[in-house]
Image (tube, rainbow, N blue to C red; front, side, top):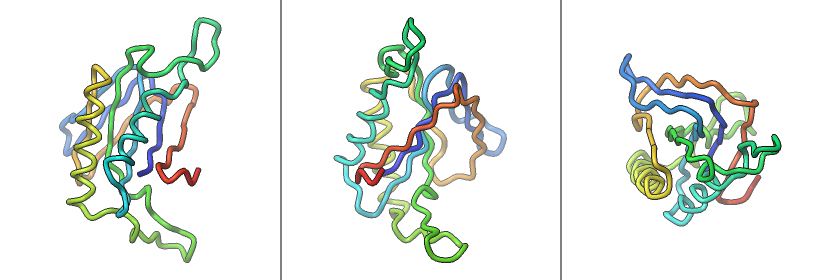
Length: 149
């Protein structure tokens, strides 16, 4: 499972003009699911996401986690995180999970997130989404449950 963590001052997702998720200060997480992922992979990415010390403390250092600041979490599914461009110019998505498998793990991730974060919002799985964000910093961190980076 792969995640792109972006520290935001605000973010929102719309589908066909309808806002499906909107947050204030917190994390926008773009989440990709691979064909080999399990609930353990989702747990790993969730734990890393909510506990990353990427928010400033009173001294201006990145030393506080999402859970420390009671921040919001917006989770957006993004299978293209498994796009492989090592060969040619057209991405291959063969490592991305099938929609049924990916949706089940995405839903699992969101439900688990709700047990540790007060406000969890989402996009709409499988939909064409418009994602708007104000990246605070900018701070962007990559997480890979296979620990490839």
